[in-house]
Image (cartoon, rainbow, N blue to C red):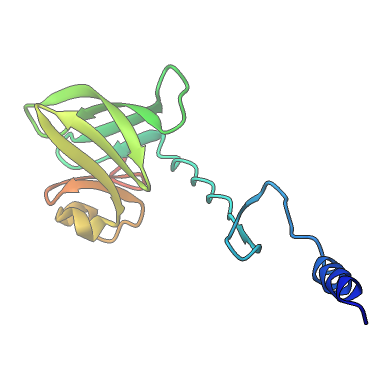
Length: 143
């Protein structure tokens, strides 16, 4: 075989493989393969905590979706002890709602009645607790 023919045959063989994937849903690597990018997981919707939650000794928590209708935002109205009540803006973070009360960041967490540390809520199953001694249940005391 002549040298020109040999070079042409080698060049044709090198170019006869499949074309590299050039789609736009990945990043081309140095060896010609494509690294596929996974779509980020969709965020879980904010929990539906809207409604009245009852504590003990006059403690009550009312949760409403924020007036602006922004998902994951809540309007909280609460009486958290015998002497203190107020309204606060709540923000969903996973299955919790955070809010600022009197300069302190507080968090409502889903729990059961035992986790509230309030003996009158023990045995309840659908509760939100801020801290031991402050909790509210949907199936709480009579309304």
